Length: 303
Ligand SMILES: [Zn+2]
Image 1 (cartoon, rainbow, N blue to C red):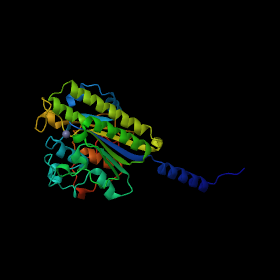
Image 2 (cartoon, rainbow, N blue to C red):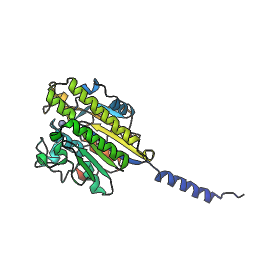
Image 3 (tube, rainbow, N blue to C red):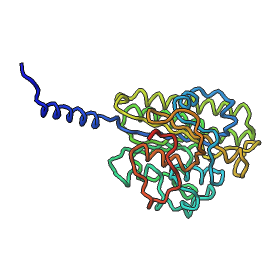
Image 4 (cartoon, protein in one colour):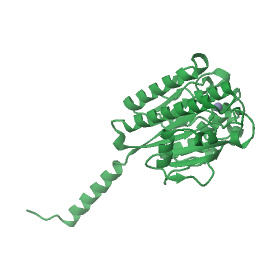
């Protein structure tokens, strides 16, 4: 039998503290983009998966787009973290963009450190391809999948995208991912209302959110990880299901941040569309460099 000297106890304490630090869960982020969601319809449609993520995290149904209420500037601003006066996209014609200086958050991660594993699955062509002067998400992303919703239909393309994302989340090791769901917007345009078809498309999008969140939780290394799930939309809708104008219904969007590192409850300060990318980067431990000239702030994180 022997006694531990104070020096030994300090040494043991140091090792324990050090090990606790190095065992901190690895931050990871999944951004889910649902195209063209009216917050009033979201509030009155059955979306149990979005609801349970919102109940566990931070939610706002009063977030604002700040940019023209169409997809080109909407997705650009959300995924870059800067407004149209920076990335220069003001319509669905993206030619003349400044994505070189203001890249999407996945591309920015690759520039910061190519060791980041980045993933995107997309079915609206300008997000992924040179269609309309794109892509919004560059080819620097490690795995970028594209299923063409404009050719094969957004119903098929969304379900194929989600299946591919579930597979990737379960079997690969992404640090940051973006999954896009397009059919909700398409259905609203086709029916020109907030009617039953639009609500059904939103219910299906909610089921996709559930499948993606379940895939995150089923990861074999989930216990060692700190996942942030961010969900938002590029624009709302007017009363006839259209968008592109300046009405509150078109400008108002939702913002949802859910995970062990988020605050819980309704967000009181107004989130803006540009906050999504900045929150994603911040969760990953990235210091936002003022030289990047971003407009967003981190919203819903505990620290
Ligand atoms: Zn859109």
